[in-house]
Length: 126
Image (cartoon, rainbow, N blue to C red; front, top):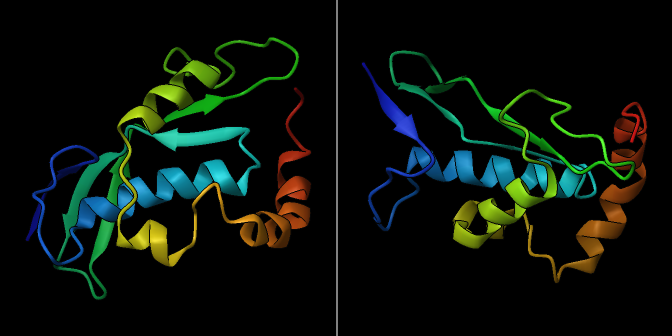
């Protein structure tokens, strides 16, 4: 019992749709890496046969904002900062984004995660 899932095919319901998790994960990846990485174009199967239900993802795109002009660090689908901008032009925060307080206006989130996130992204050469 699974069904196809991608970031763009969720019906608008008053409940949390599985694709809302994909959108929120993309948004989270951007905030957690201090705007250096964005994992997006998430597709896969929402597997309701597993307990708990699981989203099995395939073929993500990763956009990397290099400070030294490096391009396509994560392959041909890596569009860097322009790819991130494209994502956020269409992204609508769901209940999950709001629950995680991912809004750019939330300075406390930024401060609380900055140290840990900076450590994680320091492994990437700009």
